[in-house]
Amino acid sequence: MMKKYVVLAMDLGNLAAGIVFKRIITAMKNYADLDIICPNIDEEIWDCFNCIPCPKYKRLPYRIEKRLQDYQGYRISETYWAEHTYLKVQSAVSRSGYNAILSFVYAANFAPLHLGRKLAKKTNLPWIIYSVDAIPAPIAWQPNEVLRNKLYRHLSKYITKADAFFSANPIMMKYEKDTFAQFQGYSGVLLTPCDDKTTNTHITEHHSTITFLYAGCIYGPRNTNALLKGFEKFHDKQPQSRLVFVGKLYNTDFTGFEYLLNSGAIERHDFTTNISDFYKKADILIDLNADIRNDVFLSSKVCNYLSYNKPILTISQDGSPVRAMLTGMESVVHSHHNAEEIFTAMEKTAAMIGQSIDDRKELQHQFLPNEVAKKFCHELEVVIEN
Image 1 (tube, rainbow, N blue to C red):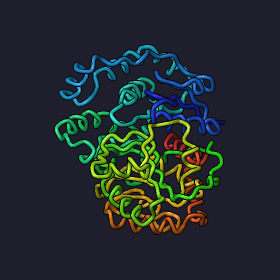
Image 2: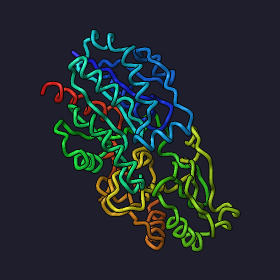
Image 3: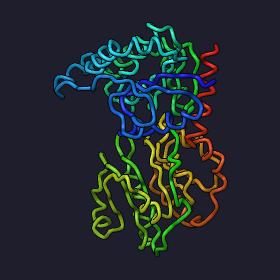
Image 4: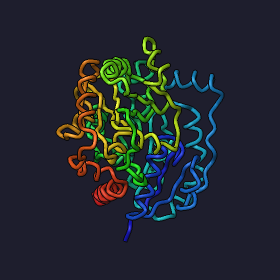
């Protein structure tokens, strides 16, 4: 008999983290019975699951919210939503025969923690947390140490009370266990699943250029400077080459590279849901990670890259999850944030165009939504039985 869980989240299917959560719970339908409490759900989820009605989430005016967050370390509007929702759903949750309560959180979005803790106390059910991001963010990603310490104290009140905590990769999980040393529950890894609806992954449209593609946003300590310098040198030797960015480039400075933009050697495109055409025209896929040692984030795009019949050039520093998980694969070339090293990596990947990607098939399989969900549901049963 399948176990029954209630899933608490703030977004399913709309924002980046919500898309990850949607993939997970959609695949979990094969292994568990799920009810959903979430104020921001796309239509597909609403039609496929029993969604328990809950209040809409409304933030306070930005200046008030920001001032209170700086003072307290968290958003007061999330606490209000969680309290209000608890009053609305506690009776339904108490009588529905759930085996556990699942709180899905991301970034600085913690209302499901507050709600999950209150429901767990009310029902005496096991309480499991999954965070797709490192919480609180490492100091390199959150340089305001005072605010980070406030958030840590706030999170400690919840995470240490959970029965299980899951992170998005092994290095992130170690970071959480080191950060919350008081946590004594079960810990596990729930990979961010790939988009298994990707089609034509082995098709590349014929073209005369060598095209590098970066598909995703660039923000925080993801520094493009070395990449741009490395490509500039590659373009000097291969004048028909192109570097294409698709997504928001929040902190990318093209000063000194304007001539490459003007000539079309570097292209910038806004975020799009129809990215298949860019993949078809690409020869090499670029994965740009943080320019810091021992980072804890594995970029979400790399799990999608794995299925494409193209070399991957991944840029990171030592100790990163991508180096830990993708080292040893000939179809994946690693580089540090160093222009000369990136240039060499570009030459190496260019020579690999059209070669086999069979060396990453096993890892690709681990990121399939069904495999992620099956492993997660098995571990949930372990938590419940213990």
